[in-house]
Image 1 (cartoon, rainbow, N blue to C red):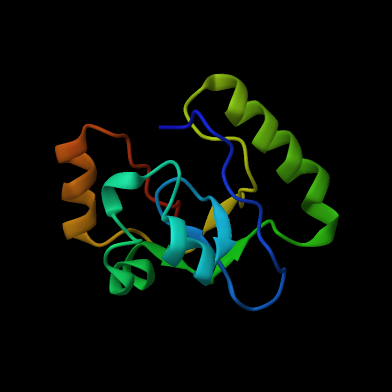
Image 2 (tube, rainbow, N blue to C red):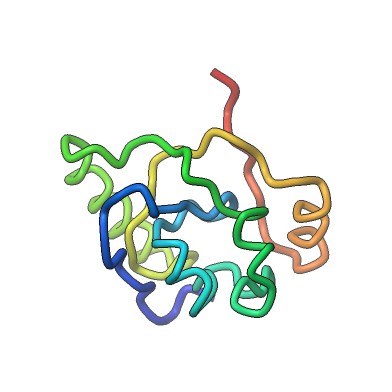
Amino acid sequence: MGSAPAQIPTSFGHELRACLRCRLVKTYDQFRDAGCENCPFFKMEEDHERIVEVTTPNFNGWAARWLRIVLIVCYLLSLTGKFAPGCYTLAVSEPLTEEMQHVCQEERVQYVPPKRM
């Protein structure tokens, strides 16, 4: 997990999605083709319905004004070795389903649900 750089989004329109566990931002097609570099155990490239289950188009911190902060967060995350270098959102607005939270527990990976506003 987290060794090779993650794909950078190929477009910045409405097709962007964020992984609900690690908050990696890519397009739907990129998740379909390669899955999530930080969460391979979700097997998105094998089960395309799973993409909708473990990613969301609703996330915060991706506006142009946040770009520098997002890039700094990406750099800091890559230094920790926990996540692949890539583009991340600052927050997602929905939690993983209980089933997917159990997958995280089985894989012994940390999942931090979004804070309620």
